[in-house]
Structure formats: structure tokens, C-alpha cells
Length: 523
Image (tube, rainbow, N blue to C red; front, side):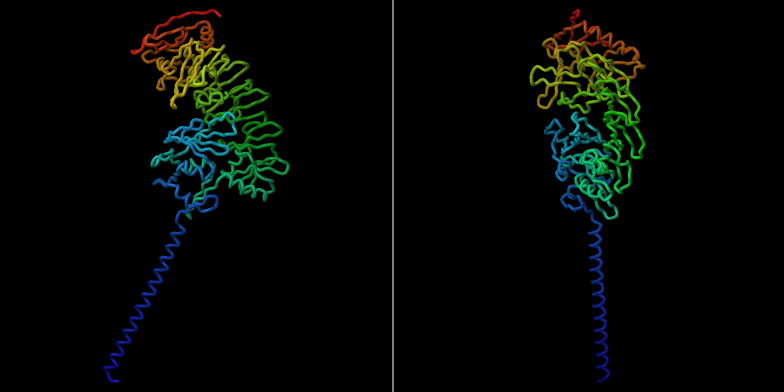
């Protein structure tokens, strides 16, 4: 082999070696890229948001949620309802309509009402015969997206009694419905030595907060946490979880009281019955020896336990949109002793003495006339005596004499109207109240009895008497009202009720001129 051939051969070997090296490097790079892509895909898969409903991943449920820039998770209310076995409707409970700015959802035991732009959800316990509304406040208001009502996960949790858990590390959202939790914990408490959990709906809702009301083989009840630690011993005849306060209504030897999670006695176990009356004012309705009274959350008496009834039957006024059977006009508690009703404020002060034999008017002449207790926005309450009626404001003052034959409402095309029937004539109650300065923007709030009250008509202002004299004045006015009946006609065919002894002066309206014809009847 000559030198030239040897040189060519060496060059070829170097080229082959270089090519082999390049191929090996390329293969290694490809392998690294594949590994990198695979690792990235695995990472994406692991870190991608996953939503699990009752332990099962649900892509459809995940598609419903909408995450805002501030991190708040929203759900379409009506669409998500079916996942929790709830029915959904437009409008309000008891007043279905096509109003898409409101909706409500209904389960087996509870109803929740939503309103656009509101931070408040109204819930109704269907097991409560009076259907008192319970207000739940949420941080983020209900909003509309493309014409559909959406609520935050906090609101969804409250309304549907579900549990939301977010695992930030693994980017997982876990959603548990109440029936699922009941099934899980029923099995779990057996391992702790109990026979099961309470089957009362209010007690089952405690599971969402990690609280379990359990029962033993002797049918005694206690409270534990989800780790089996004892909160209250299983020695009570009954226990009811109070969702609003987180306390427990316990029954022992047919007497009831309230204990806290720390076993503190908030209300002595001495009452025949205890019911939550008003969460905002922290009031309970109590019953003892067949008499009723009001106490606060610490057991202090606000209204003495000497009354025959506290609260009214809202079923008699189903179209009146009453939120509570215990609180009227935002501040007044209806109390009955014997045959007569009086009114107290939420601090326990008597605003109106026991003198009315009716709260509300159920006397109607035809199907279009509906029973009425209160005129919303005006906080005007219908009261009656001896089959005659009048309206009182939130200060307990009568707006006219006890002369109306009935005071009722009508509903025409979803619009509510209010009327006063007087000697065969019908007077528009709203127009009447506007004429005496009781519009929604007027000063119509109750003050303390020791303060002077000022009431303003459209262009007239007069001072009322000191609050300390009001109770006696109410009685004087009532006696005078029973002896006087006033019949008025409006020259423009609009009629107005007026009273000789009322403590207000009516103004002359540019569009109306009122004339008064006073007559007295001795009873």
C-alpha cells in the first residue's frame, strides 16, 4: 500500500468516526427531548386542575366553573343544581315568575333564594311550618354572565349544603354532597363505638363543618369531631345543631338548653322549648310552663315569659312576602297576651301595649282581595279591633282612626297594590301614605322612648311628644279613635282617610284637594 492510499484510508476512517459521533449525539439529544417532553406532559397532567365530585373526577362538572382574575370560583346556579339533586326556578320561592334576575333552588328539606348583585341568600327550612327565612351573607355578590346567574363557590356551598376543599399543592378541587358525607360518616362512627349518626337534616349539615352528632345503643346523643374526639358526651335525650351559631340545643329530661363546642352552658337547661328567632339580634324564643318569652344568646331575658303567643302565622299571609313570623317592619316583635296583641322592639322595649285583637286583615270580599299584614317599603302594619282596621308605623303610631272595614292587597300582572276599604269605598293605601309623608325616603323610623320624635310630611313638619309619654298617648288616641269615625271625599274622585285625633297635619297637594266631614258616634 502506498502512501497515497494510506492517506485516503485514514481520512475515510476519520469521516466515519465523526459521522458516528454526530449520530450518537443526535440520538442522545432526541432521547433527552423525548424524556423532557414526556416529563413535561406528566407534569402538566399532574398539575392541571382536576375537579372530583364525591370522589369521582367529573370533566362536565369542571366545565361549569368559571375562575375570575381574583381567584374566585363561580358556578351557574341553575345548571349546577342538578348535580346536587336540587330543582331550580326563576323568581322567588312562593312567587314563581319569569324574572331572570332572581332564582331559587329547592331540595328535599331546604330552599335557597338568589338575587342579582346581592350578597345575601335567603334560605327556608321546609320542615319549619312558619317557613321563616334565614339570611346568609356571602363575600362575593351574585352576578350575571351572558344573562345567566352565577354564584361563588362560597354561595354554592351555603345554598346546596356541599363541602368544597381545594388542594393547592396538587391543584385539586374536591366537592362532597351532604348525602355522600352521611353515607361515609355513618360507616366511620361505627368504628368509634357508636350505632350511627343523627338522621335529622340540621344535624347532618354539621358534617360539612367536621362535626358529627352521634347516637349510642341506648339512643342517647353526643357530639364528636371527624377524628373521633368527644365534644359533648353521649348522654342527652336529643341534640340539635344550630348552624348559625355553631352551638348545640340539648334536651335532657324534657328540658332544653344551649351548650357551646367548648361545653360552656350558654342557656340553662330549664326550658320546655327554644327556637332561634332572629340571628342578627341574637334572640331566642323560649317556652316555659306553656308561656312564651324572648332571651338573648347568653340567656338574658328580653321579654318576660308570660305571654300566650309570640310571632304570627305567616301561612295566613302567603302572598305578603314575609321573611319572618317573629320580626315585623325590621324591628317589631308581635306578642299576644290573652286576647290582645302588643308589639315590642328587638331590645325588649314595649312599643305598643296589648290592645289589638288582630294583627293583619284576613277579611276579604272576593278572590281578588288577598289577606294583608304589612305593606313593604313603608313598614306599615295592619292592626284591627272590633272588626275595624287601621295602619300603624314602625313607631307604633296609628296613621288614621280604627275605621277601615278591611285593608287588603291585590296582584295584577305580578304587580302588587294595596287598598283601604272604608264605607264601601276603596282608597289606594300607597297614595294615602305618600300624602302624609310615609314614602320610602321619609323619616319613618322608631326612636327610643326617651327621645323626641320628628315626623315630616311633604311640606309640613311637626314635633311629636316625648317618647316617655307615647305609651299613654297611644291609649288616649285609641279611646278617642273608637268614638270617632271620619268620612272623606276628594273632589278629584280620589278618597282619603283622615282622623280627628291623629298627631299629623295633612298638606294640601297641588293635584288634590281634600275636604273633611267629621262625625262622632257614641259607643
